[in-house]
Length: 507
Image (cartoon, rainbow, N blue to C red; front, side, top):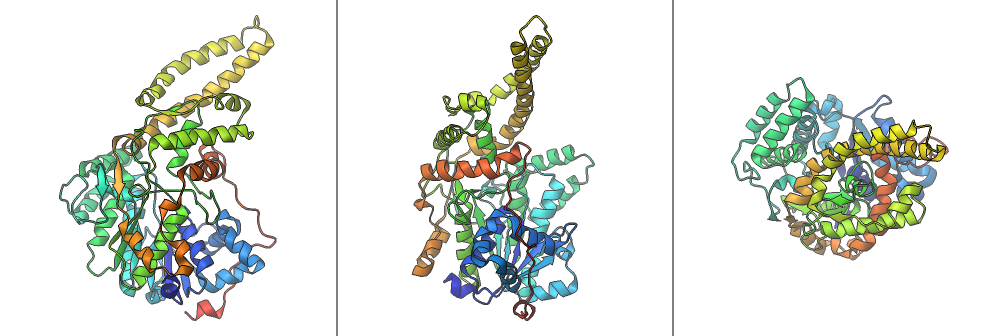
């Protein structure tokens, strides 16, 4: 089904520099190299869009399957299939010149993965990227008379509980209020003209909550959905992943990039703050990134064949739920395994080996209590450090503890901000996202593609979380939260360059 639908097709992809976009492209090229052409729209940097993409293909761990398969020939393999166009989705016409736009008129499918995923971004940036960018890709898809697969999020459901169907009622907000998507966007733009970022964020949060969205991210993604679904000439399929996390198997177990939802929670539990204020019975609806990519491939093939659903949710909680209580327990197991293998500092290896994280409402007030206690405690330690009557070993200990409390003070501030943003998702609401649309398409897969079925029930949550998710977070996500950098693969012997050929040029 997928191979037949994609063979020889021209696909346009946005978001290839992001987590999900990379995995989808690599999976597509690895499994279906007979795709005709993939045009990736990339924002240019100082070196330009092509060099930026080549650098990603050379160093990103996500591209390991292609590097291992093609070796020194990867540049030629990619050059025959991938075309890089420098684009800016926040500009009219995506910033493409007339010749570039004309080249997209032959496209058979537009896959839109690009977007801002921060919970509290500047509304000006969120609207420009998540809303305007989606509309501009829709315009290109309409001009090509091609279907568009738009990647949204399950959490456009807003502040509600219970089952969330795979549907969209245009002009009806999550709280049931009727609204005009275009007028709401116009009103939102006016609020983005405020000079101070804090004022813009406050105005954006107020606008979001007035319609039942918990934050600026879900508000902007929700507005985009309603605006796209309002376009009668657009062949639209909306893919809504839930919480996208570490790869289960592809490109390799544990691959992650950036700061995903589970990363800050795992980081929080790996600090002295051991009590996560989550409702232990609520679903923590995560789905591995490669499972999302599988679902997107199935939906892409269905869209090309004119039989894709209007909305498809890619989640786990309806058929294979994982609760916050279980997640916290498994995170504690993962952390203990990590320190027992030598990870962390000496203090962390002693501390975390014997303590388990637990859910509990006391976690809401603990950061504030710590923030009040820390200044006085640090003052006492400073006095001890300067007291010549104390043995040198005690003064050194006071100095070390003072430094640790200084770092903890910074952590406490981050924890308070994080808990405020996460509260609707980890405590207040329990969503159950229906996923029947994509699972129904699994039946159309031939035996050769059966391993690409969207089927989260094949996951053992304990094995996935302890052996895959937690190590992946510690490798690729937690370092970023600690102000470090995530590892890249070593550079190739010769810089990777896309080798152009007649195969791409003739398309």
